[in-house]
Image (cartoon, rainbow, N blue to C red):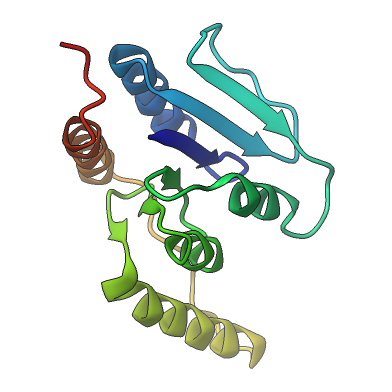
Length: 152
């Protein structure tokens, strides 16, 4: 399993959880962004900076994603594309996005976009809570154990 992170919008606290997990489990992780990133010095963690442009980081993640990889993103169209390639997707709030729920999430996203485009203020997502962070960390640990990447 390789972890690919949509790093442009990933909160620092989630990145910190990911850094610790990658080190602890010796899992390869790549952060992809269209801006400079600072990452810990580690043989398990690397970064890719893509050229700025609409969905440039998403396109690179889609290109890199392999079946069984874990993608960290809240971007629903990106999640849909990599689920279609057989990758696992974990949102920053700890929700697994998969075949069973991705179409529903994509539809809801499109509906909210239509509302915003018609002038309705839909507000944004709630701030990341302690419960969200804990849910993310717990789900990440379960996935890493399930994939048998924890050193024995």
